[in-house]
Image (cartoon, rainbow, N blue to C red; front, side, top):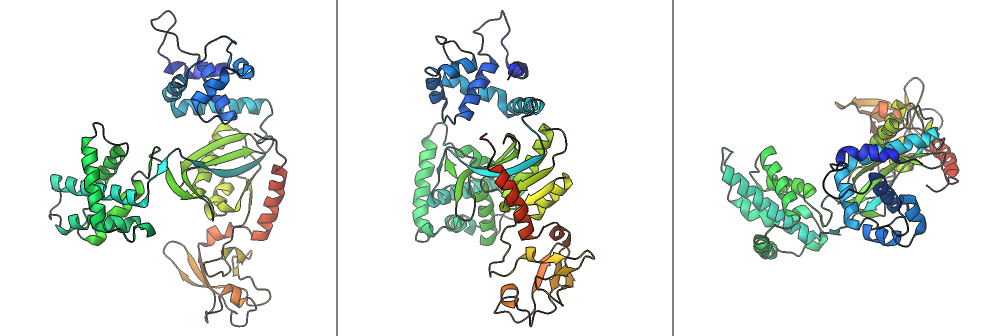
Length: 440
């Protein structure tokens, strides 16, 4: 593949001119080829990449270096990535996808979407450390308000005395149940002394100041303990949660796995398994929000109308169904378990007639659900008609409930959810074909 376009796209970021002063920079194409090797072979660090380059003849040939030529050092690779930035790399990758499309490596017919957890290079704060940082931020917030005096009523004196207690409550961890506010206050005093002696301040100080400044200008000052607790909970969500990667967050990947870092969503072409779009968000974000951005990115990279999209059950939500419908794709989405916490039938077991009537899961007469209330947000509450003698009553309405089954749903969104078994069968066929894809 000809990578000469890399030099063209990177030229605006290079200030050196032929015949000018200074040492000429490494060619952008060579540097990009090095980073490409780093990604393809899963090399963790630039230092390891440079060391391997000195003994791997194939790698030297790929990047365009002779056997005795000196290779760039690890700091040069870091400077190259920082100089170009995200947008230039996205342009380069988009050009590579166009070359794959021209050579028939991408068909844009059957697409797949999936996501994976990306663990951050960071050490998460303990609950005690998070409470300590939150108490520091709350004190800083109160200092800013008292110095600015932009509010009519003075802050109650009790708010300052509640900071430590509220910080422990906001973090809400079992490990803090036996921690007293006095103990946290002693640690806070030592932390403030340590920070004051640091010439440049700790890594988390700048993002903490930004969060406090934004809260001081955007929100009304708290007047009681309840208001201070709400403020603490909002600050806790935006304050750093680890040493190292300050943007990383703790999130749930599935029902049994947690990740401290990020979630990466991928759109994959079904022909050879080439990734055509990648989106990244923090691990505490809603996974469903990854899909629309990834699909729009794929459509921007690959021209033409795709045929179908297969997705796992983690994305069985109305928002995803609507997005697939707007894109003109045939969706294959596995049905997730829609049962409520009591184990009752979920909304996916209720279906619609062509006339627009909602039917319950039972067979026979009295299946039609009766609309009893329309809510302001567009949702409608339906109620069953023949629940008293229904053989499915224990699994639908619940054994300990004497009344009929009720269901509150947005009708338009619910109509877009296919029946679970049918969707699972269609997706199963797609995923079985995906297992035969060659490695990317």
